[in-house]
Length: 465
Image (cartoon, rainbow, N blue to C red; front, side, top):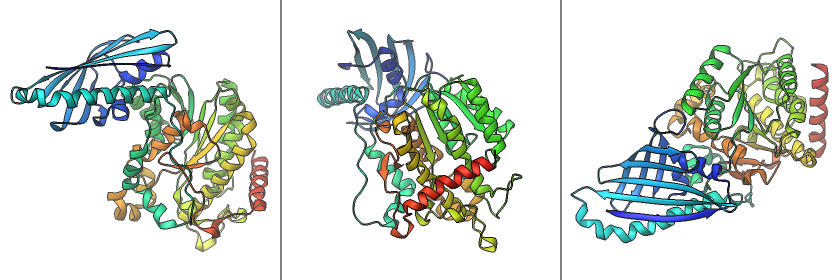
């Protein structure tokens, strides 16, 4: 038997430390041996919860099936892991130590008869890995990570950046990810377009972290199904929905009034709702659908919910844009996409997302004194229901390189939860890194055009209210 025993003290409340460590999926963030980790049973972490952890050990790569045997909140968790080569019992205890929390981590390895003669050979290496893992846990809980890599300098090139939109780009980027141990338990997060795809993946990840969610969806049957699935899989019952067709300004205004009447502070607003329309279509209010849903809707929603954002301690707004915007220059006169026979849903989508990126920068500047952080992200190319229905040819060709919805949503979750993500405002992110907002000089807008956008949106909001 080999016993690894390490301790660490961190300046974090015991409840936050326990919540982070007891969710054993986080081991992939701080354990030097863990390559991947996932929870394989639904609901809260409790006695009987199971995890699968893929580890790199001196005996090679092994998959451990963990079972929670003991769990006492803010006190102790005992997990038993099994693989072909050994059994391990992890006992983790938590104690207050002044203003700090002390974590005592003990791992007892019992090897199979075939491996037992090599136990002495493995001992030194495993003890070293144990020390490194607990040091990694302490570092994760200290949560003093910088923003990962500054915005790149140099020549603007479209192709190298676009190549990072793929699944391969995500897997290269994640090698630079920092642990995300900040607590968002009890924070109120509003997510639009959350019945499937990126929005659903985001909601699930944030629900696991204990956030209170208000999900904005259009279809009641899908909303009911999404809430039931999210509550069942995460164990979080603080998830509700509001029905609204966000391409209709009357629904946006109704939603704003309802949330303001309820009065709950909004810690994070995630403007995710979107769709690509072909052919050109107008809403019953006379607005081109892409413009209405992708730009005017988040403008009116965010402006309308600003009082609830200001009530939060450290509010954040996250706008979901698209890499397609790199091909478009802000031209306010084209935002209604009145192109006649030349209309392209993809171009219309990219135009509105370019405008939303500009709006992100303008909000960040204007709302800095209010303490509201406003950033944008684009998810790369993710295999979502929207892509499947709107771009079937693209999906057919690129399917092997498309990201999963969870991979596409990762940066949304990071922008909502990570401490360091609140350090900057008015930026564009991909895979948790600041990216250039323009890759072609010809797409750069003038100061006058930016001002024209704000006036245009304000006028449209007034005439459609």
